[in-house]
Length: 199
Image 1 (tube, rainbow, N blue to C red):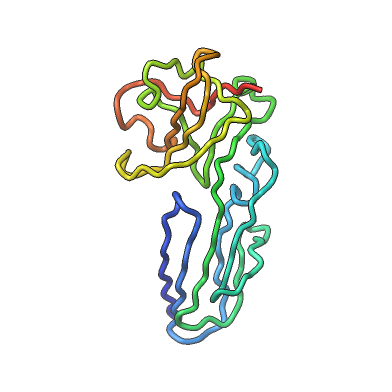
Image 2 (spheres, rainbow, N blue to C red):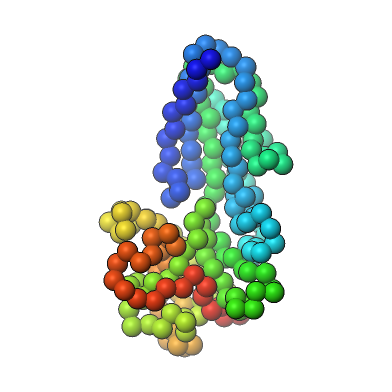
């Protein structure tokens, strides 16, 4: 049997995914949707890293407009077993708040530091976005508000993160973080994924 899947999404910038299912003929089978670890509160499948906040925004899942339990099995997939017909629509909504990530306490070099993550992407600071600043001396207050902004003209179109920080321990500055995968595509300069954190 042939099944055609049509996907509409702006992932990884947006967590909304719409799948249209078109089987050759109406049939019963399981459509398995990957529910990523970051969406259920686990940045990696070990205790090497953890999110600062254990609260997990609820995942949304609908089949033909009807809400469905999105909980994955142990294999990390939500198995949607049903009789599928042409034009059935699955809507998955993976919330993407900006998350603070901490390393395991035994990783000495990362003590007192925080990394930033949004959805599946880890972020970093580049000198190109913080001109004249020593990135090793930037400090991000623990309560600083972090916000996402999509920039279509930057690095082929990326979502960046902004937040208020302190340079050289005191001077207020606005930091800009870019996706880690996109660093070193502009001018030469320093980069860090781990930012000093102020209690």
